Amino acid sequence: MSDKSLEQLVMLAEITAKEVSDGQLTLMRFENGWKVMFGIPILNPEESEKILHYKEFTTLKDALRHLAGEA
Image (cartoon, rainbow, N blue to C red; front, side, top):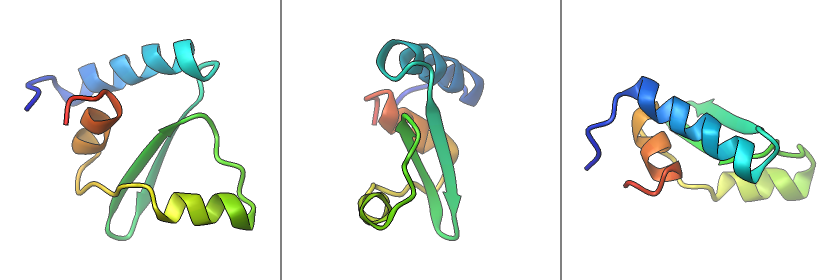
């Protein structure tokens, strides 16, 4: 597992977001955990359904590790 700090993971996510999604990065906190994605979700019924199926993580750090491909 990655030993990067939360700050390092956020910086890595920001750099990657600039490369793959015009700098757009979305962090979502739900009742049971975190979901993250590059880009901005379009909140219509179809997109909301997709978000429901995104993997949920207990911590923001774990979510960012997953986004970075380190989990």
